[in-house]
Amino acid sequence: MQGNKLYIGNFSYSTTDEQLEKLFSSYGKVIQVNIIGNKGFGFIEMGSPEEAQKAKEALDGSTLDGRILKVDEARPQTSRPARSNYRKY
Image 1: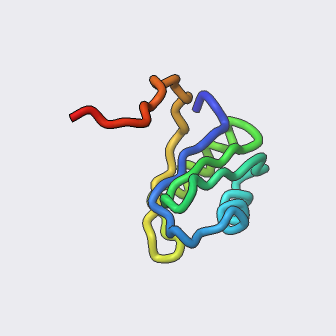
Image 2: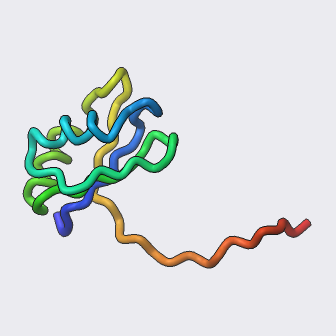
């Protein structure tokens, strides 16, 4: 694994930062948890790429609150064009 940041998807909208931190801390130091709104996905930064790899292998496909988690290495953020405030018809 290249980096230490993981994508986590398909968790319940009611899942908290604290729940994810507790779950992932079993595999190493959790630096940061970032849940994206009420969308059921987010990102976790682990202490090292090795810890991130261990967490990914252990938790991808596991269950949290009745939902099957998707855990993968986070892709680098890419720049996107600015969204316009109007629609073209």
